[in-house]
Image (cartoon, rainbow, N blue to C red; front, side):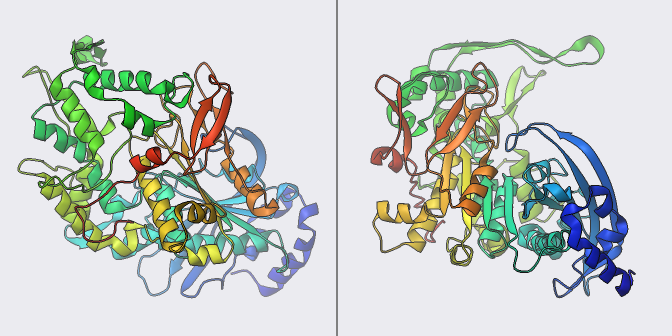
Length: 577
């Protein structure tokens, strides 16, 4: 335990923290003195758990959401527990910039897949902007364990503390602790503004929304491709399998790749310029019919595995696109339906890769077979049947079974994982800003999912305004940007000239701190032949268009295009936000 005399002594000397060096403040004793021990009722921070290390001239590589940077930082790890819960420990990791680089900012980061954090890989995206950056292990036992590793206490028994920590509790606790720790560490006066932010994608996007929908902990958030509407999203991964099962046809991957490549080629120029990027998937849905691919020849070379004899893991694939292959593709793009043909859920845009439609080659039967989505299987086995298994079979499963699985998950986890509460009054009332980005060719979380949520917030919060007036009001503080050609939380390997908004956090900082409202969102080509080329992304509901023979860029309002994004989920009596 640190003595009160020492605490006061360190606090007094911390008045000069901005003149201090990293070595002055990056010590165990200094960090222990800065811990916010009484910031949350029911939580005890363990001072003895503190681990501190100073790193000089750290060079972080460029990521999709931030560029490369070199900086000094103080790495801190600490633990806290919830009073009255046995064997409870939550780990927090913070990277703090050198005192002379601190810009009165704090950043929470999130995870992906079933992970609540990204290790330390996302932390440079905060330190490079003079922010303290934090990550939590959610109380799962380490930063390497995911939520589904600890979700079940035993078969049939949910660990509800782990569930609710993953759902929303852990991030709120980290933000409250992290912000006060930042203030204490840099000796910020109460009158001094600390700007708090968030940045993450996929599951991390859902985690971001779990906070925005409940609290006002942050001044701004960058949320990418959020995996929210959880019960729908997880079962959605099984729809491609069901489409193949219904057609009793399991296409070779090369056949679907041919359909995709021809779709990209045909739809690329619909935005007014041919650049290898489908910027208007809505126009693609209106003007292009993938039945045009029937009869087109495809070929993919065999792939070889390592090991004795270097036997081929998959054979060469050749043939012509079949009517059954196109029927499978159309069913996937058309989205999940029940046995009465009613729409259960939305789906991917036509330029997205067929990641959920993977098939496996059986060398014994010389045929391609169903390969059930691991994400979908994990959801049904673990979260619905409460069994520690991923052995789901679709034998006997129908469209109505998928619908039942969605409804069961929706009821069970509505308050914790669904994460689509559309009334953001608390966050907005505190002045919070949101930049929501989503790859238009996302193959894991459909881009239409984000559009649906934005539209839900618009209609709930501004019900008495016209569409254009309510859209304008929402865009004053919450903007959605679809990223042409991008896949899931990154540029696409199929549309390499597509852009990605690598500096979105900087745009958000300017919006929050300098009141510079973004109109378009700057993005950059991060790969391919046009690497380094600048783009501007349009804020929804405006759509990109090149006019004057591809020389003039505009963001235009196109009602017919907007309508293609609005799915009528008429299989449900309840509203699907």
